[in-house]
Image (cartoon, rainbow, N blue to C red; front, side, top):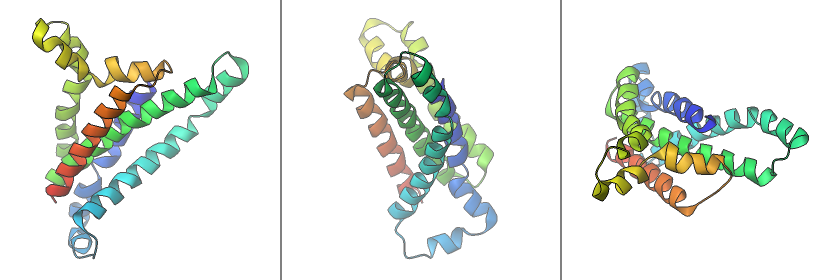
Length: 178
């Protein structure tokens, strides 16, 4: 659940990134700066991810209580947080791309939802898809197949590859559309 909450939080922060610049009238100033489009996009990305990271740290007292009073490995908790931040990274990049497409934050949020809902619902869809495509659709399930394993304390490279690829592709698309 923590990963999905961070995903929503990241998307809501990211959809403001470029859209708010246009509404506030600071877009020409940003475009006139000596920064490249890539640097602007990465700056927005790292700004949102830093905010998400701080929010994640604030919630760290709950796992700390479990560590003190329960039987959970610190590595288990760290892997769970890493998976949640990976999912938030995907949400941030999708939100930045959507924000680069429109000047309205509401439209950017709707566009982000259009991109993320299929990834969130892929596990349900894979149950009704025929065999040749079942594995492909199930692989795209960012929560059921990927996030839940990280929440259980099991890190795997396929999730890192999926989250990294999705983040890279959406950041590249955001940069190209500036």
